[in-house]
Image (cartoon, rainbow, N blue to C red; front, side, top):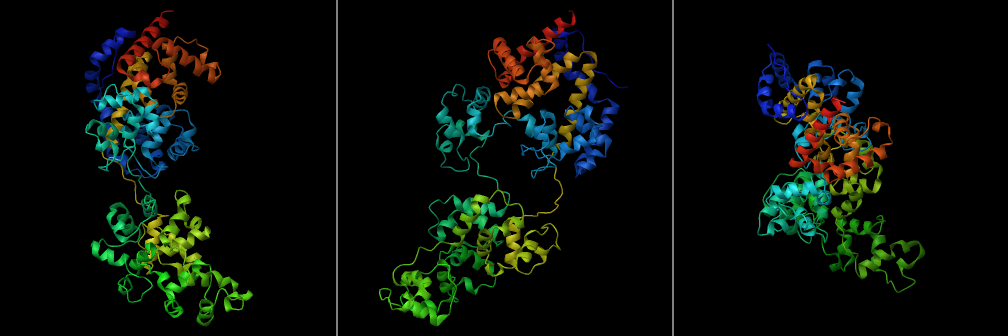
Length: 575
């Protein structure tokens, strides 16, 4: 026999009864046979869903899913819900981002079909009171949440020390030398840890990690030891070039090798990826200014080619270059001063005086890719940017493939999850490394649902079904039960104070509660949206001394607001 939740009385009296009996009623309600069978089926099968269509085709799973977000009425709106599920919540222009209802955004974010992040626990969004705070400035400008965060860390009364708190919040807690970690009071680190704004960036691929960590060395890397001592950058190098983690001494010998010397350590290694790494950073690059004999430069083909490239010159042959290098620059009749040879004048001058400072391939690559680091989405994007493409090939030791555009596109766009893809079958390990480093096509890896995903959705569904049953007796009591959760969801969504108000106006349950609690007239919803916003703010300030919806989540104010709603709704019922 099923149990139906109930409430005795209306208004504040009914609320008092419900608060006293809610826990017991919920326990009995959860044991209802129909609900129990529904949730058992849901928890067993929901994490097998891989696509929006699979979810939409399963009526039972879809019923619980939509019910968990208060979207029961959308069970028949297949096309609409599909567009919601396929939306990327991080894209402000996506379908769901343009909807003025946080319930749809919560649904899309929880399943993550349109996001690279994949599924998330519902509590990761709605249960975290600070989920919508994206920066220190946002927190410091929100007095309610700032006081809550300080209180959580035992730092009540510190909210006016804005400059100090900003430095605490910007600290990298993984760095023992950061501002927060050097303070004698550990509570400040605890305060910062609630947000971790100063945490290192999470990279989407190895190239982003390599360039991001390299760029932190604003003065450049002076030696191989500088690289070896930076553990994060070193790991990015190893991952990018797909190397095995070996001893520091081995890597030091690799990095310090003169790559232009065929007898150097790195040139004796069979795996050419180590040569590519050594060439990329150039710590062992020879001192070309120490070469005064033309024969010594002409005898080092690798150094000669690199020197010519500095001046965008091709190699016209040894005899020609010998005459260039031996020319008397001050003699108008010398070889290099002849009109047909003037293109090599700067090259000869550098040899006889001073060469331009050597710029590593890694620095050239960083300069080229940094402005585009977050916008490259395919191999075609990379290949069509010729200077970036050449710099990319150079750091992987693939400069000889600069004309093989079709081959490189096939390699870089390969499905990395397939063992028979072009990249995975290619014999050139450097090409494989480049494909994995950019990871343009990671392929299908299957959706991984976080632990507790099914159970959290089932709990949300049960709670909302309980509220629906209460609403059959008293709709106002249902609104009162859901008020805190719905308002918290608005606060968690972040944005400005006005953005919170627009979300409230766009949420039928919240709008009903606010219109009643603020004694707004029945035709209020027909007003211009800006007038609605301003009127709500004015009346909220008059009644509660604040215009920010998040302030109403403070326990005393929340209780005061809810009781006002119930009292006024009860009075309206007798008029």
